Image 1: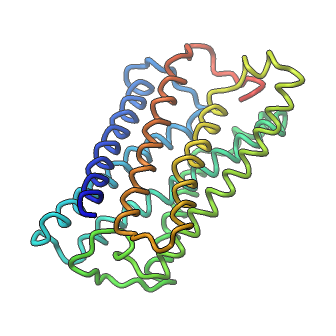
Image 2: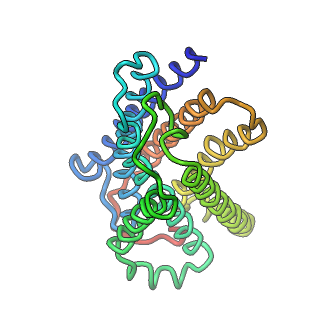
Length: 283
């Protein structure tokens, strides 16, 4: 059991750092080296890349601490597990919220292209950032306000489940599942529309499917494969020890996120983004 847990934590740290480096490289290519042309229409995705950098750093720190105290419990520090995990919870909430907004944005772009192109630019990126900050603040209200979580973590605690009370733990899992389900439902609706367009105008769809839509679909596929399916598998075996399966779930998420990041890099780097910043029919 200790071997599986240790291996999962080590691999999670490695994949998290790899993902962090990939996102930093992508941001560097956009804002510094200019290898990828900056597009205001993709600002919401740049926000996502920045959030991913901080999320992976936070996850790496958490897992590194859990790894150390699982091997050398004499280095455990009272309440440090909760202090380290709070930033991860806030950033992860922002990430889920942004994933929902991105998919919803793509849904509107595909189903209502004219209205979308007329009014989308009226929605400032600062308003989206405000929504993300509000979601993180609300998460903290639920943690310490509604659920009344106290800063009193057992010294031997070395996983997420024991750092918070059952109220917040159930809330966080339920919130994650609902957001992922809604993203999945919107993706199905989006794919149905794209399939109809493919049948009626095959050449146009394959040629003009925008970067934003491709990344949104890729994100949804990653969520389904590496987030929903492992969680569903765990739900079918409630007797499974969370101390073992928890690190494995985290590992699956990091692996999926890294694979997605590699494909995103290919999408952005493969296309020559030096064209004027116009909105294609499929953007």
